Image (tube, one colour):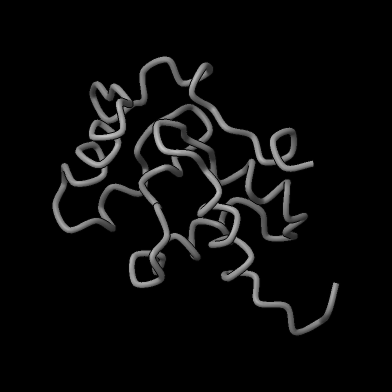
Length: 109
């Protein structure tokens, strides 16, 4: 890969492929992109994703918790966006996480 690769844009491109009603994780995206800084780098990218037309609400932590919810317009915005897509969330955690998990490694390769 080129030295001057835009990691954030790579992350955004993957997140744009997550289907409505499904979720992925910071770590799954990092593994797919072989990012050295891993899930943290994906998290940094997600912090600014809202201005790049990226469905950041579909990215949760490794156990399905809405760990990035404080980067949305209100404390419940991330949950509301997921629920509009049919994802059930209780106590800031995606229900049926295993069934809804979208792994870019298996879905895109």
